[in-house]
Every structure is written in structure tokens, then in C-alpha cells.
Length: 275
Ligand SMILES: [Zn+2]
Image 1 (cartoon, rainbow, N blue to C red):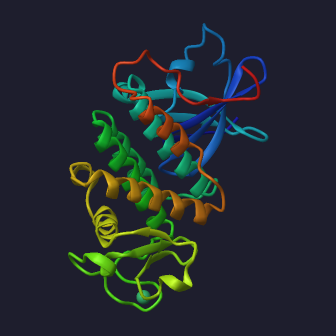
Image 2 (image 1 turned 180 degrees about the horizontal axis):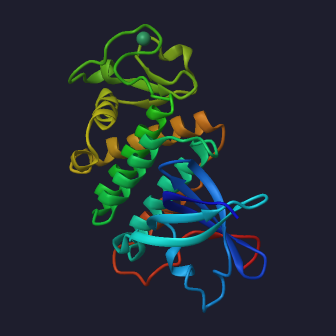
């Protein structure tokens, strides 16, 4: 059976049959792909611990008839800081969901791989607010890389530049997901569905689209603007995907419950028919 190597990150795993899992990998060389990890539901499996979500490793894959098979994994990083913190884990889940749905299968996209790896790197020891910024940075950068960059520097209707330090009616801007960007107060009447927000949120968005993740996570933003930013990124991604994201609701519930660090080691997302 012909084999090949790939550097990859485990995005998710799904149960198949009695003992196996399918693993969705984001690889540097081949983009997103699904492969079978045989026997990984057995407690004696040596492979099982190497295909946990977010594991970064060198994978040896064997070509199969329908799905390829993971033969060996050389683990490079396991991100224990993500696995032992519910909220970091949930934001990593958001990253995995976005890239899994945004990137077509077997479409090589090295920059997307780099964006995800850099995000996991900053998530590893991120505070609650930093974890959120890292996930939003990743969502915006992936969208931008794949050709869905939102317009946040000017109004999509009339081209008016984003004002600096606007207040009162001049600050009543909106984000129209269907138009792909910011809408000024004068153009808002034509966009009834637009999410209302202030120019500062678009400025933050623009910063995230340009900044390195290490800088993005240190950004200080008022809580109200932070919430708007998260809603804006979600609305933008969901419009591009033409589907709802599941992870923001999970994150919302965790944050409402005050989830914090030092949880028991979670098994991570392991979707499957029945467990
Ligand atoms: Zn306008």
C-alpha cells in the first residue's frame, strides 16, 4: 500500500464502527483531509493518544480505497494548556469548526495551516479574553486568506471612510453580512438586517486583520465592543458558510457558567453516532 507523509493538526475525530475513528486533519501539504485511525477506541491502542484533537504531528498515511489510513504519528505538540482548560478547549473547537467548514477537502492551503498552528500556540496559555481574541483573529484571518475578507475600512454602500472617534448619530454604523462589510449611518436605511455597532469595532477588526496573533491577544477592548466583534465575526463567517456555527453557543454557555482553568482532562470533540 503506497504511503506518504504529512505534517498535520488533528481538527476532529468521529467514531466509526466498533473500534475505529475517522480523524479530520489539517495538513500543511494536502490541506484538510479525513483518514481512518484503526483500533483507536480500544484501550490498548498506542495510536489513540496520538490522534487527540489539536495534536500537531508528523503523520504517515497509507492510501486506502475510500479513506486513507493513519499508519504512524510522530507527535510534535499536544497543547496540554488547551486540553486542561474548558474555555481554551472551546475556543480551539471554534477554530477547528471554522477551518473544517471553510476549507474544501484536499485543497492545499499552507497559509491556513500556519494560521491555525499560530492560533493554537497563543491559545495554549491564553487568559479568557485573550483566548477569545485569538479565536476571532483566526476566524478573520482564515476568511481573509480564503477570499472572504470583510470590508471594515469604509462603508460598502458609499465608500465613506470609517470615522475616527465618532460619537452620537455619527457613530451609529452597522455591519451587513450579506453586503460583506461596514455600513455608514446614511446607508443603513438600505440594510434593515445590519447588526448595529460603532466604528471602534471595525477599527479593531481591521487591526486583527493586520496584526500578529501575539499582538492581537493583548488588545484591550471595552466588553460591549468585544461582544459586538464576536457577533460580527460570527455573522460574517456564517454568511460565507451559509450555515450556523455550533461552537459560539458552546462558548456562550461556558462563559455564562463562569468556566475557568484546571478542569479534568477533556476528551475533546469526539462526534459520533452514539456513544
Ligand atoms: Zn455609506
